[in-house]
Image (cartoon, rainbow, N blue to C red):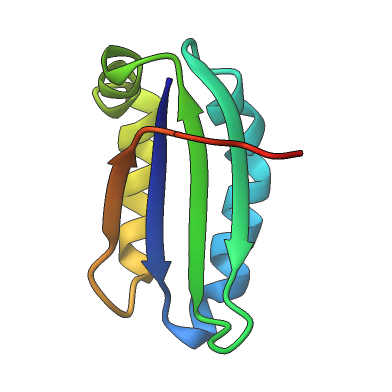
Length: 98
């Protein structure tokens, strides 16, 4: 499994637009082949900063999503709302305690 963490910083007046769009497309992302988990977080200190955490079957599944029409539509819109360059990490989960 591959875990993808993406940090997104939005213009303050674009947060509502981002959240509306995310709520419209989140189920499509989650149901994309190879996606096993999706969560969205908002920073407690700076409301403009969000993080997405997604679990993918493997790197090939993530890459298939990144090459998809769905990703192209989502990213084309989302990047117009940014206040800062996004950051992303692909990591391996080493431990999980529930």
